Length: 149
Image (cartoon, rainbow, N blue to C red; front, side, top):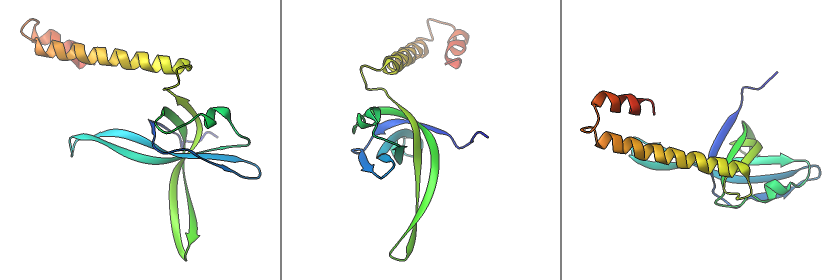
């Protein structure tokens, strides 16, 4: 049966990755900084999510992750608890299955992502110009064009 616990996050690696080696597996963990716009504060804010990747042996792709990398992480949310000093602590983190680094100049996905971002920026500029020049076009045409974007 397929799991409904799936999440995809896009953000920047906000901490230096930590590699822990165990008898049978290797764990790479880092914090992913995810930006969002807050209407309340009218500015961009960040959430910081712990991400962990478990592999049976060291992985070159994972070893290339460094602080500041723009990446998309595909995984699932997990929660776990541990006891320390007679207190129970809970941790929620993303257990990563796969990832894509967009800053990697060798990556084909990086080129595709940059092309999509460039196209979005062009569309934003076009819509801004259209809205500013409504006297040149009828308002119905402007509304029809801008409502679709």
